[in-house]
Image (tube, rainbow, N blue to C red; front, side, top):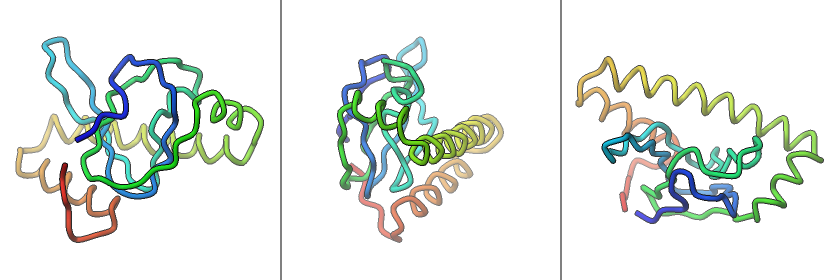
Amino acid sequence: GDRLYDEDDVIRRVHFIEGGLLSLLSTLEDGTSIEVGALGSEGLGGLSILLGAERAAHTALVQIGGTALRVRAERAHEAFRRLPVFREKTLRYTRMLMSQISQTAACNTLHTVEERLARWLLMCRRRVESDRLELT
């Protein structure tokens, strides 16, 4: 699939996902990439810019094509600073994403490949709101 940005890239745009599935990947020292999070229409690509970082914490890879609203990073950051409702909703989303990343780490450690695949398919199903998954 398409990459919106790679780990450690300067974030130039924030993506408010309307449909599809975006994977957040963490790259290990040996170059191996591991999915640590999955974003659907609840998601926001480029979150770290709103939290004060200039660079991406993860690689963002489109797994299932869809649509997203793109906003220049500086405008999104300004909205985060100036609009309390946007800031509160973004922080709530951040807490949810942190919980998902923690759960993913636990599952990757404790579960079999089959169990991890089942969890991933259920996460995809919930995020794209469809019984059909077309991976890119």
